[in-house]
Image (tube, rainbow, N blue to C red; front, side, top):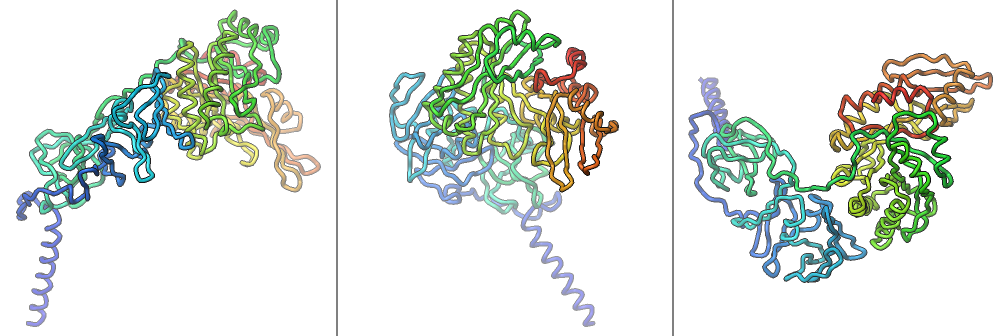
Length: 558
């Protein structure tokens, strides 16, 4: 009898626990719970006030609130720059520069005047405000110039922001249903959803409910079974339209390194045995000082000789000057603008066709200034019909300051230097193994449109030496030069089918080990094939003069 009673009590406890769990969500088709008809007081829930607005970003409520002052809604700058980095604020100079596809606009905190294409213009209220020590941007200004869908809504007071051109995971409702403040039918109602209404998925389902946002920024939970098949929704197509200047169908480019000014005769000799090149990028420019002045090897006769051969000249500017820090040049508006003007003036003076940027020492703190430099330089290049291309490391989390997606918005070509897989300090290995290059291309395609990607290919290889004490050194050289060294030393070159290149090594009587991952026409072909396979814009070879003679027949095919 006691056992029976204990068993009955145990069963009742189980049923009780099940009922408690049922209270939190939806159970079966015959829901025994009475759904709440209470309307949520969202103003109280979010602790809002007459002058405090909710900020909803891509369907998610943000901790940063927007504010109302003098009848204008202002969005926190931290939110603004996270959605559209073209709103560039220089805290030191206390000015914001907005770069549109056609002009520059300058705004200043708590000031009712701004500069538009150099002309002073009056605003009814400040477009920027500093409130309690924080910078805010007018919602009207953000709506006008950002690539973000911006709406001001009430009940509750909220600023609803969706980045344009982005596909959000979404559903359509299959029936009229309630959007609730929590994952239970007993939670208060945020909004009534109509049949066929689109909602954005903002999290994972729990207790039979899906966290979603409406397109007007109401967020909450809806019964999962009231949603149709998952799809994608674009709130608004991207409004960024930066017309390019390139007339090339494909890019067949060679970098041409020079240590002094060279003219047409030198270029003629350098191109004597080449085939298929339609762009040459001479290393002409670098920083001279922090004022924006440049050193220049630009030469009109060089350009004339290239043009006679149907080759465009994209003059390269680097940041290699050891005594000038890029940050000091780029973070100052006056010196940055001077640099842009000096580059364009020199290119126009000699009749070249474009500018190629090779800035390899951009730091985290100079990243925002660098991308602003690219945007401003775009305006000058487009005005003068010049092609703008930028050299980059392959996509790398440690190089996020280069902001590849932002580059791709404005430049004609994003060139990925798909070499230096192994370098001094990394340990011995290939300059550019096929799996590494293939992975680099795939990662690049996630960020930059294929038609803007130029694949940088190595026309050099390296000799790695490990001495008897284990010290590793390297020496870079031309394709023929390093191969000849390997063979002369006694290395047996064996094909590595995983890396898609020949490998060889030998050890001297002094117990010195020499290793070679050979870059030749066979290994290069595998990499070059990635260009048509992925519909890329073309190739760029580093550098002219290091290639083996059989490379030209290969490159001419692609």
